[in-house]
Amino acid sequence: MSMRVGIVGISGFGGGEAMRLIANHPHFDLVYAAGEGSAGSRLLDRFPGVPQKLAGLVIEKWDPASLPKLDVLFASLPTGASAEALARVSKDIKIVDIGGDHRYAEGWTYGLADIWPDQIKGQARIANPGCFPAATLTALAPLLVNNLIEPGNIVIDAKTGVSGAGRGGADSKFGYAESNENLQPYGLLKHVHMPEMAKTIARLGGASVAGLVFTPHLVPMTRGVLVTIYCRGSATTDQCLDAARRFYFERAFVRVTDNPPQTKWATGSNLAFVSYAADPARNLVIAMGVVDNLGKGAAGQALQNANLICGLPETAGLDGAPVWP
Ligand SMILES: NC(=O)C1=CN([C@@H]2O[C@H](COP(=O)(O)OP(=O)(O)OC[C@H]3O[C@@H](n4cnc5c(N)ncnc54)[C@H](OP(=O)(O)O)[C@@H]3O)[C@@H](O)[C@H]2O)C=CC1
Ligand SMILES: CC(=O)N[C@@H](CCC(=O)OP(=O)(O)O)C(=O)O
Image 1 (tube, rainbow, N blue to C red):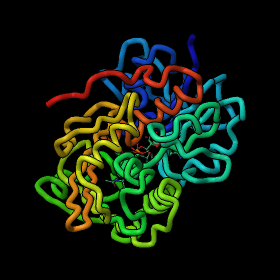
Image 2: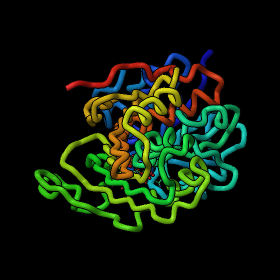
Image 3: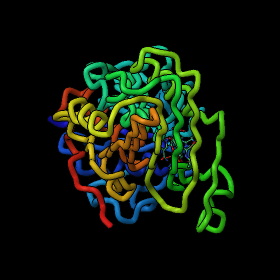
């Protein structure tokens, strides 16, 4: 079965990664690419290493009113730029929005694919989670549904690679000179990912999340997100690992490891790694999660969601090994 798919925002980091994955997908044919500043150029001009079959595809100026026949549209636009435009896309076209405009928005399903795939199947409007929530919620879900931690007392310390800010990079703090050999916290107390994490933790844990703290840090690497999450609970390390192994039994993309995960384990893949360390005497549980921000944190999970809504095998086009080292 062949399906016609498109990407708007293809020249960016998230859209470019979606293109890379779609190029190897057994059922998706990329027939439409769109953008703003890049409109008019061929994919070959933007991506010299693009597979030959896609080299001549020309990036069109994004216009939701004049789309070709598509089965799925992947949107990877700056947050704030997709809500109005995607509302004008025909209902016949399924959408996976990699950006932040539709998370927990009316009419959209929050696409936490490893945790509630059955709620995603059959839907037509999917909001992909942010990269920090992808790592955080994957690590916390088994603890929350088994009541092993207090939902109201969670402190998330996160590290991200610089590509998390996108190709545009927002401002000069993402330039080489500013980010190389430097570490910087940002977004304290008010990061945009707080609402989706709070809503999902409450949904999984069934309780208030009033004490939630989240502090991301920019680290000098290209890809990767690591979250170290401090929780209150009296479970042992083995109880946490057992709960996660049961929760993710036969789920293709989550690996539960005895040792603390590392960002390089996930690079270039749709994998998430989770692990735990607990000290019941101190009522302390530490949960850890790792994803590639462009993989599970963006394009990988977007393709997983597209597979689910199209009735395809969940792993189609996503079973490649990570890049290592
Ligand atoms: N980077 C990451 O790790 C993650 C990103 N996201 C989210 O994904 C989305 C895209 O991020 P990212 O790829 O990093 O961003 P980039 O800055 O790398 O890319 C943005 C893309 O949007 C396009 N674009 C911007 N304005 C318009 C417009 N008015 N009309 C059409 N196209 C437009 C640009 O196209 P052109 O060059 O043609 O102007 C470019 O292709 C954001 O919402 C981001 O928050 C989510 C998870 C992780
Ligand atoms: C380094 C960096 O800036 N990272 C981004 C997260 C990227 C992401 O997940 O994007 P959404 O905007 O779609 O949620 C940030 O902290 O906002």
